[in-house]
Amino acid sequence: MQVYFAGTIMGERTHVATFRRIVAHIQSRGHTVPTVHVTRDNVLDEEAANTPQQVYERDVAWIRASDCLVAEVSTPSLGVGYEICYALTHGKPVLCLYQQGRPLSKMILGCTEPGITVRAYADEAEALALVDEFLSRQSASGEQPSATDG
Image (tube, helix red, strand yellow):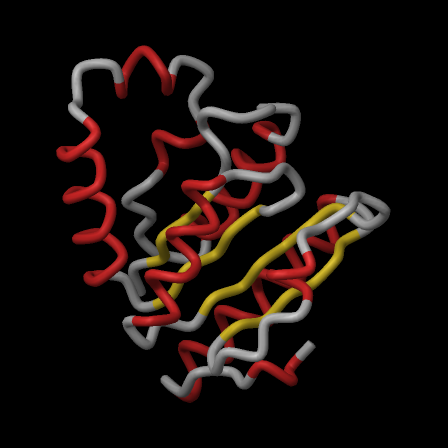
């Protein structure tokens, strides 16, 4: 499967190590992640060469081409929120992961759109297990999880 990974680029990058582990884990399961650049420390430098329109067009094309979206949402991000909404609007299942104890937007916690799963994790091992559970559902059934899966 192609899995779009979403994580903050412009905001607080304190969870970038977790981003790396999640993306590496998804790849180790044989899936493709077009957004691996999100995990790199120099992502802002890399993205500086692209206009906002180029980034938008590239990213929405990647979402449309992906089978699902996995987002780490512990840190608020307008871009990640938009990517989540775009994916849901285009029928892509979405997993939103956030670190237990961190405040999370009620727009994400309260979302009842079909296809969204929101899960808190206590540590990286639990986050990876939640990713596995989500991806295995996508691989096995090809069906979107319901909003009440959480």
